[in-house]
Length: 107
Image (cartoon, rainbow, N blue to C red; front, side, top):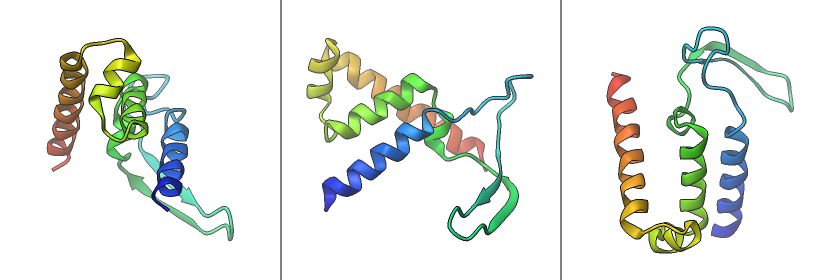
């Protein structure tokens, strides 16, 4: 059951990699304005912040996907990426700091 949930999460995260987060005209942050149920057509309109993982750039999102695919093993990620463990650990620390900064900026 865990693997099924993990696969669904990975599919959703992979889809998120393709969504724009910055305006192509002025480089301002984009926000969600409408959600729609594909089953019944119900729509919810408003202005909503993007989920925290959407605020990461593509490379950072791919790092998060790798992290999940490797069950959080930085050692395995370092081996796959051909980088040292401290380099991968520092990247994760940078992502954590970036997400905390976004979270504190929302208040």
